[in-house]
Amino acid sequence: MEQCSSECDERQFRLANINVKSAESTKTSRVTFGAIQRRRVVTDALPAELSREISSVGFATLKPCVLDSQCNQIFDAFDELLSFLATKTGINVTTKIDKALDQYITEHPSPVVDGTVSLSMLKNQLGDYAIHSHQYFHGVYDFLRERIKLPAELDQFWSLMDSALRSCDYSFRSQILRGSNHDLLPILKVWKYTPVPGRRFLIPVHFDRSALTVIVHTSNPGRECLLIGPPSCGKEAIRDIAVRWSQLNFTRPAANAFPLVFPGLHADDRFGLDATPHAVEQVEENHYSRARFSLVFFLVPFGGADVKRDYVVPETELSATS
Image (cartoon, helix red, strand yellow):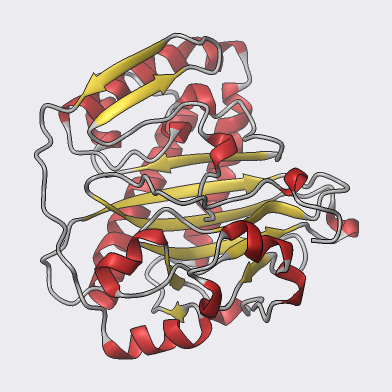
């Protein structure tokens, strides 16, 4: 995604009907969006030069709109928030804040893709990987701070995310989309990958469930860990791609390639582009003590991010030859 795999869907939200499955309980509740109306999908063309670049190498470089220093502030604030939520005080406030989040989601058209929107999920790593992530969308910060006294750590983090999302949404839309007639909603997501010795990937080969994904900025303890596969295999099953990943002509982006955009699985019917497979490889062994961070902007369909095909295969399910 760097986007959440099937293993991280412990708390699955859907845009029109949300099934919320708590990590601490098997009880499932359903929330219906009264504010959401069905919108028709509108095919939007990308600028010709951008489409050609993506079709050639699988991604395209955009003009930056958020400073690297601002992204690093977000990474630091996210780390501080994770530490706070592990304390007794942090644990006590999460339930109240998550209830307010659910209220906001119920009352507003919100591009919720998975359970990482909730604070209660933040204390859990995703699947077999030592990953923590949080997705943020428009309006959350203003809505909650008017109703709840936010802990300083969360207030700082959401303030930074809100500012960055506004900048990304304005700048990247103007660079990527021609016109304003589209049904795509923005998400900004931050990721922390803690190295797991013995693992080949920090997150395995996958497609994103977005229409478009923009990797805004990454922070790697060594070399860049993001690997982008060729666009030529976008119609293949993700398992087939993962099995022969090491034989593919993938790209390790240079620092000056960011921010970069590539298509997700919902790009085919909107832009005529195949999804770009990608992975985040393990950090080098001499950097195992340090985490990797990334900030990712997604444009997702108004009707939700569900897809009918597999988009990730856990590393543990692949043979040793993959």
